[in-house]
Structure formats: C-alpha cells, structure tokens
Amino acid sequence: MKLHVIIEQDEAGYFVAEVPALPGCLSQGTTFDEAIANIREAVEGWLEVMESKQVIDPSRFIEVAI
Image (tube, rainbow, N blue to C red; front, side, top):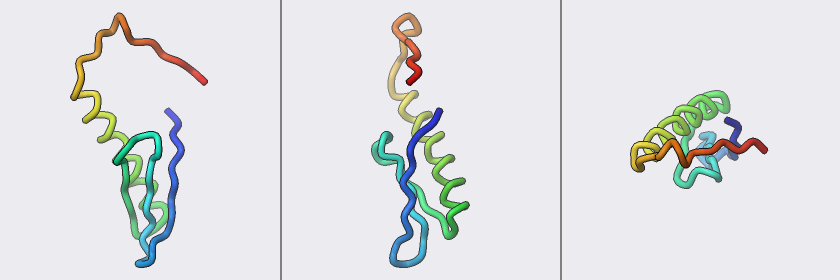
C-alpha cells in the first residue's frame, strides 16, 4: 500500500508526519528518519483499529488498483 505522507519540522525542531488519507493518523520524531519509522507504525495501528471496528463481509470486498 502506498500513502502520501506530509512531514514538516515544527518550531521545537521535531519532525511531524501526517497521512492526509487517514484522518487523525499523525506521528513525530526527533529526526526525519525517526518520523518516517513512527508514521509507518502509526499507519499500521490506524488500519488495525479501523478494521476491528467493522465486520467486513468478504463477498462484498473488492480490490481496486490505480
């Protein structure tokens, strides 16, 4: 899965990462690389939580490639 991530450095020097396609999926790190590692973990957690909130009927599930 590929997602766009926005990473900006804040006033305190932290790198803040956000995934616009996943509301509320944010993370940060003291370095750029740490922010990337942390946002990957945040995406995995976000997807797990959202998947657990709903029952998915496999017969209605399709995959779309763009």
